[in-house]
Length: 348
Ligand SMILES: [Zn+2]
Image (cartoon, rainbow, N blue to C red; front, side, top):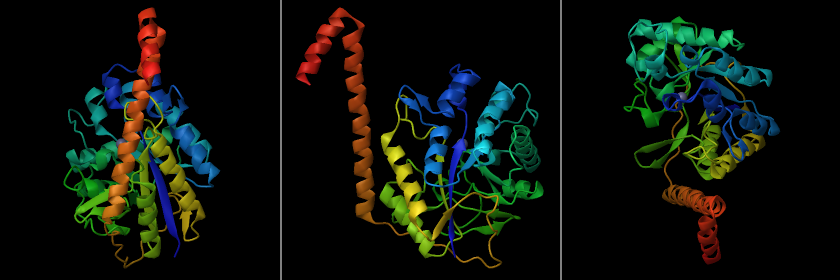
């Protein structure tokens, strides 16, 4: 049994930046291209890295901003992904409905797709798929709810619309927006309400805490252990995820070197492990008639501690850089600044 590593990126414009006055272009540059003063670290950079390792990625694209900005910006997101041979699937952030010029479900709004009645969920997901197809994507077969905010009705809606896969089940979000009634202790693919659920992989980082296989949440060591556990168990899939903007620092001002190193390590591990292939949902086989249970790797306290230390060091490095930049700006902004900055630099 070969395990399919599905490396996915939730690819989305920021409703927060929209509210702060960003137009489509500025939002696209920050959220999708991952543009900061050191260069671009968004989906183009991510595809470059995947391709260097011979891997194919999945981009869950949120088309809802089309209701606010118009469809051209979604075309600009979808085209390069399709052209480069990676997969486009449906992501949805219903937060955008609050700002939409036209609301396809009347007056209904909500943070998560699971907040809507079944008929409205069907309408929204169908519209989302149509926008992506209109932008040039092959007909999507997989779905992931924004904020993992899906419920069982979402799966009913997907089944009725002919979707084969859902990837909205994330044990870390269960009870915090994710209301799909599945056992979070089983990471195996299985059919639920007519669709095949492909849960987000992960491991236990404490006795009762699930840590999802998200790029910025897991150390290289944890990601490797989680993947190894799935491959050893003969799992059909291992599902790791990130975002289009996740290789930037939290304030999006500079690249996040730790996250970039982690992505590089994940790509290398997948490429080097003979038990693992990379790819998306288009060619993913469904679950066997009686799917086995895939357990979650047990916690290792020292491993958890090592990640905490690594993240703390990364955070401090970012702050140190911030202070250094502040000195630089001060030095170059005025004569007094130059004097003060010069003293600071000498002291430093
Ligand atoms: Zn999202």
